[in-house]
Image 1 (cartoon, rainbow over the protein chains, first blue to last red):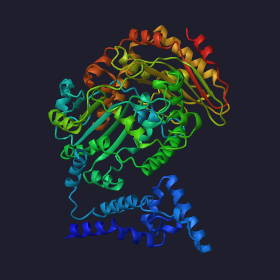
Image 2 (image 1 turned 90 degrees about the horizontal axis):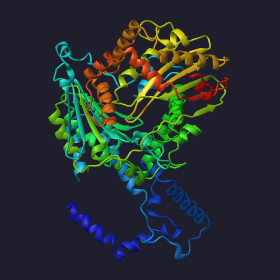
Image 3 (image 1 turned 135 degrees about the horizontal axis):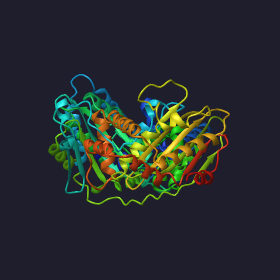
Image 4 (image 1 turned 30 degrees about the vertical axis):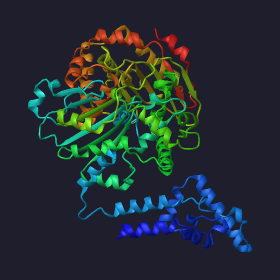
Length: 127
Length: 477
C-alpha cells in the first residue's frame, strides 16, 4: 500500500500538475529554493553547518535577496525565477543523514542486537 | 613507538623516555611454563595469496584474556609528497569514526559494547588500525577493522571537522620540546624527504599550524587515492597477539581484504644527509644531536640498543632510583648544572635509523659546555673503554626495558608490526632478539660507536649560544 502511494505521489509530482503547484507556491519568484525554506530547528542547523562554504554563502545570498524583494514588494524577473531545472535540494540529504544518525543513537540500550550491528559492517563492504 | 618517544610533560619525563623497539622479550602475562621454553615457537607468520603478511604471537594460555589485532599499512609520513604532506595525520583522525552508514557515536557504541579499545597508530613508515578486545569477541570485531579501509565517511563536513581536530592535536603535540626536537632532527638528518617528512606535515613544523592542503581540507578523492595507494597486498601486515589462532586470523584476513591486489607502494630510499637547524626563540633552550643509526634487521641492531642504554638518560629535578638511568653515561659524566634533562634514543627504520641525544638547557646557561662533554664521552665510547660489569648492567637494563615495552598483547602487537613492516625477511621472535642482546660484546659497541658517531646533525631551539655542526664534527675524532 505504501509503495503504491509512493508511486502515485511521485507520478503527480513529476507531472505538469506537480510543476504548476511548485511554481505557484510563491517562493521561486523570489529566487528561493525549497531547502531555503526549511525551518531552522537543531537538525537543520546541523545540516547548514555541514554545508560547504560555497553552498552556505549561496543560501545566505538567496535569503538576503528574497528578504530585500519582499520588503520592496517586488519579485525577480521571470527569467530569473527558480525552475525545476535549477532547483537543487542541497540541504535535504544532510537532514536525512542527521535524522538517521539520531535514530541510530536512539536505538542503543534495551534490546539492541549489537552482534547484528557488527555484522552489518561486513554487509556494507559487500554491497 | 611514538608514545614511548614523545613526552607529554613540558620537560622530559621518565615515562616517555625514548626506547629502541628492536629488542623484545617474553611478556609477564604468559604462564611460567611457557616462559621456560624457547618462545620463538609461538611466533607464526604466513603470507596470503594477495601478499598480505599475517603474524601471530602468543600462546593459547587462558590467562591471556585480552587479545589484540592490528592492520598496518606500509606508508606513514614517509610516503607523503609535498602535495600530500600531512595526509597521513589527517587519515589517522578519520580512524574508527563514522562510516557511510553508521555515524560516529554508533560506531563507538558498537565497539564499546564489546569492551573494545580501538586505536590508530601513525609512524613514519606505517599507519596502523588496532583493536584490543576480549578473546571471545575479537573475531566478530574484524568487520569493524575492514570498514576502516572500505567504507570511511569522507563527506565534506567530516573532513572539515577532522582537519580541525588534527590541527588541535598537532598543535598540542608540537608544544612538547621533545616532539619538536625529534621532528626537527629527522628533518635535518634526512633533508626533509622520506623519513625527514614530519608526521604532522611540513607546514605544521615550519608554521606551527597543521594545514595539509593550504587553508582548505583535501578533497575526498585525494584522500581515497592516497589510501588506495597504500592498501596493496605486499604493503599490508596483520598482527594478532594474545593467543590468536593463526589459521583463523588468516581466514578473516582473506575475507576482509578480498579485493586487494598484490603489489607494494614504491618507497624512496632514505639517505642520511646531516644538516643543522637553529630556531632562535624566546624561552627555554634545547639541543638535539643526531647520527645515522642502524636499520631494523641489521646485524648491529641489538648493539645499537645496548649503546643507547649505555648513554641512557639524566634529569636534574628528581631523585631517581635504580633502573632509571642513574648510572648511565649521560647522568654520570655528561650531566652538569647547565643541563636540566637529557636522554639518548635510537629509532630503527627499514633502511636506516636515527640515533640521537636531546637535552634541555638550564635557563641562562650556555649550551656549548654540555655538548663538549657529550662529544668527549662519545669519543671515549669509540675507544672502547667499557668494562664487562658495565656491559652486563647495560644489557640487563636494555632487556628489562624491553620487557616493560612489550608487557601487554597490544604492546607486543605494535612491536611485531614495526618489525614486520620494516624488514622484508622473517620477523624475529622476542627470544631471538633477547639472544642477540646477550651476544653483544664490548668490541661490538666500540665498533658501532666508531661507525655512527661521525657525521652529526644538529638542532637547537631557544636563545642559548650553541656551537656549530662543523665544530662538533671536528671534535668527533
